[in-house]
Length: 418
Ligand SMILES: Cc1cc2nc3c(=O)[nH]c(=O)nc-3n(C[C@H](O)[C@H](O)[C@H](O)COP(=O)(O)OP(=O)(O)OC[C@H]3O[C@@H](n4cnc5c(N)ncnc54)[C@H](O)[C@@H]3O)c2cc1C
Image (cartoon, rainbow, N blue to C red; front, side, top):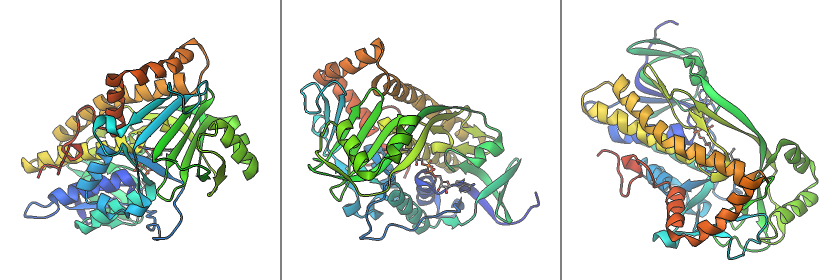
């Protein structure tokens, strides 16, 4: 690879919600002054922000309190128009053998934890665009090119992007589940298909969503209704691949009937208001999150089942943790790509992720899918959780993303390291 300008202190590959947020956190904290870091971000497919009156996208996520705080610290949250963001106050989870409004259905209420809400539902594109704007407003540079290869000549990392070769001291791979950075580094992954597909769409329902996230464990999958800001709901219906194919092929009216039955009519009749998307589900975990002068984050490092609504929230915690490790090193006069801050980042995030991924896979195996004795025990155990205030508070803390070792940006009032 030939050498050429320019040189970046940090080069982020991928301007999805996680990469863009990492860029904004770093740029806001260390983008000015005598020892300012020069930060570039490669993104070949930057989307346009949703037009003010446009209908809501079908790809939405539940953003936890920790994500809200991190995105606020990054200067992104306030850029998102409130009319497209729906805070939700309750989560109602129930197994197939109970009616939704049974006293044994598991209800997590924000009020239990003295919180106004449990998080907010917003379009992925809205958050991504807000984070990219915050990054640029703080002085960061978005480069409209894709990563295609690298060579490491410590302390220099050479990155091929389109026809150019860029140089940096720290390379961050935030380029999603099919990360080319991860492949180029030769980092091994543990990966398996869940052999399930999530059907995603927005729907209008006969009854109001009550600012509640509804989730039914069906035995052959899960069905979630997430409340949206325009009164509609986003559905995520995870099923084995063959059943999902069947449902996706149904005419709209028959699909709506099937949805009504699967939801046990909890929100009354259902009408599709977007296309149905089928997303194959798999789990993935990179065995290492770092290499010499390189780090992975977000879906490039780990992909989890969507049933707990944690994927991007874990990714934003990665972004805040890496920013914190790098900024602390930079302030102590160290190189941002030095081994010590990267080792700290990797240890920190791996230890936080391990119990979470185990729990998510357990929920999928015993609550969402499965009819054996263990599954039945787990499904009946929900009623026990519902009766224990302590366990419920623990679950609410998890939903808010406020458990474990949090980066400063995710703690209350947490401006990172300033
Ligand atoms: C059905 C479903 C529902 C979900 N719901 C939730 C939820 O409620 N809550 C939650 O927390 N998570 C949820 N998730 C998970 C969440 O969508 C992902 O974790 C999140 O999108 C990952 O963000 P990311 O920025 O790491 O990657 P991505 O969003 O995949 O972004 C990667 C970026 O990298 C860019 N890129 C790719 N290749 C290159 C390259 N070679 N060079 C440069 N750039 C490149 C892409 O253009 C893209 O912009 C859900 C997932 C699914 C499938």
